[in-house]
Length: 400
Image (tube, rainbow, N blue to C red; front, side, top):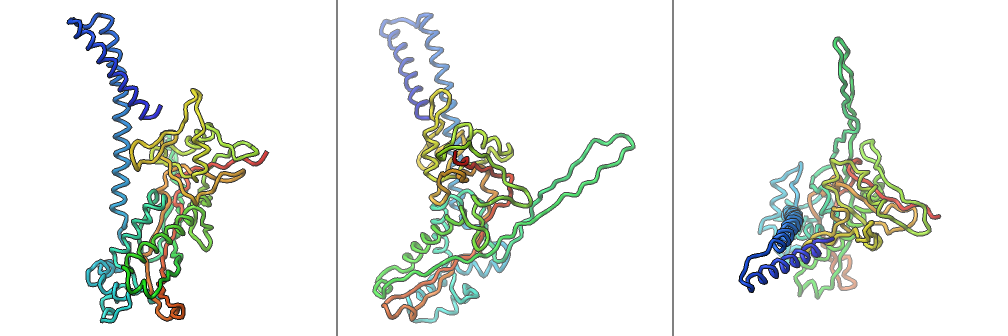
């Protein structure tokens, strides 16, 4: 029973309670013993349903506030490097100079932009525009909503403990056991992504190019990154979470469905996946899958013939499966035999590292023959799983 059905039942209880009291009032008497017993039972059921509604609505409100907090803090703090110089890209002077640069206007803008010059000669976007791009990335990309996202100015080595200490009971006069915890590391690289955005000379002269490039560039980067965070090959690309087999020497655990001629999945499979995940991660876990996988799961029913799917409680809230929120991505693998199609876990264990910001460089002459101006976008960053215990996968069984 979902929250809407519970609210409807609660409203029905109120109507029954009102009918009892209205009848007694019309007859100018108090409730009879039987009526009072019935009223008390209805009142108890109302309190029970109200507790469920309040609990679920409060939980939904907390989840929504956490999402809002993440949205307002989407621009992570810089780790390492010259932070004060980076913040100069937030000044009004830098923004004016940047717009002059993008529009190809004359004027002495080079000194103001010098704090944002990258090694390749491009110019970092003003913080206002870059913040808009990153916010759009958060809104479009479920991994940026769920993962740990940080910025840095250099390569990052993340220590990972994959073997802990083991102590024992020591008898009198006994020897203390010796243990040697082992540490591994996860290296976050600076993989380059980007492309050109072209516009006509007329658009360059007549339109708000700054907004144009921010919106167009953010959409292109969001599409690319959303795909890479899901299925990147971990060689020349970031490590997609569906391709993460281990982290720090620990293998990712998974559940495999039974053999089938189709990409079958059962409610028992989902319960097995949920309980395969260690309890320390389970209360923070989310489901991640393609919308085609969602369509299959929405048709599953429990032993009482009720759908196990739970719709979101409020606008913008995620739907829920076995009590945990569900997120979808068009870049997640579609269901097919012998295919890994579901991730369940605490996705904060997946880390995304942005290298400072998005860089842009204007090209006047390269596309002059076709009457166009080009802007080259460059983003550097990486993504990978840092804790293999934090997620569990589901793989469809082989074809029967």
